Each structure stands twice: as C-alpha cells, then as structure tokens.
Image 1 (tube, rainbow, N blue to C red):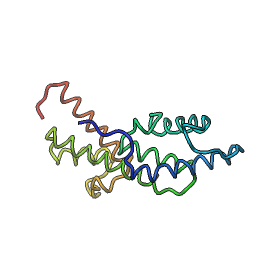
Image 2 (image 1 turned 180 degrees about the horizontal axis):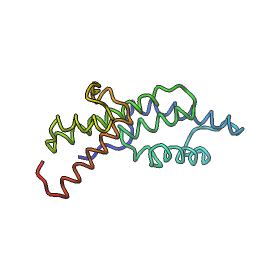
Image 3 (image 1 turned 90 degrees about the vertical axis):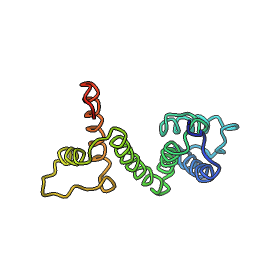
Image 4 (image 1 turned 120 degrees about the vertical axis):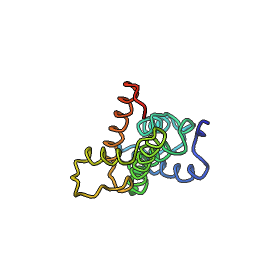
Length: 166
C-alpha cells in the first residue's frame, strides 16, 4: 500500500504560514520588495519555493511529498529559514531517532536475530565495557542508532551471502 501523497489539510494549516514567514524573511535578507507568497502569481516565489522544498525533501512540490517524513523535513526547513524557533527542527531529529529505532526492532524481529546477540553487538559498536549499562534504543543518540543499524545491516548481508540460516 502506497503512502498518500501531499500534506493533509491540518498539515497545510501549519505549513503554509511557515512558508510565508520564510518567504518574508528571505525578501528582507535579500533586500527584495515583499511580494505575495503565491506560486501561481509570483514566479520569483515559485522558483524560490521549489528550490527550498527540493533542498528539504528532494521534491519540487508538496503534492509529491509524503505526509510523514517529508512533511517534517519540509516544515523544519522553512522554520529554520524563517528563524521562527526550533519546534519542528527538534521534532525532525526526534522522529528520525524513533524511525531508526523502529527499523532496528523490525529487522531483528523479521530476521529472528537473538536479543543477546544484538546486545553484544551494540555493546561492541558503542565501545561499552561489561560494567557499563547498555542504554535502551530510546535512550541512544541518532549517531549511536545509525552505528547499530549499519552493523545490523552488514551482519544480515554477510549471513545472506554465506547462506547461513538465521
């Protein structure tokens, strides 16, 4: 099942005002007259918007964006451009950590990787001694989660190449 594309009306209600604030700040910083933030009637805005959205999500229009990851990336990007706080940027990094932790759990479940093995691998990858408590996935930093995710994927690829049963 494909994820629905385009932002929900509720997301649009948060996103569009943030884009307008970012456009206003862009005009101020560039010394440009403030023109309407309207893609259909303002070619300068349309180009700026498409370039910025593409930088944030890899997509030139919100119609192609997903309602989950792309929304958070887009609104956090425009929040930073608008210099309007860090709420969405903090949410972005928190969501990334949760997604990585979910992927680790899902890969270990699907491939029936033993929890003891995963704990040992995590301890080695994080360079923790036996006397140091191993943090839970929710307590780890993004960098730590990425290290563990990468090692899990390498281990699974090696097992598949060798034809070893899990």
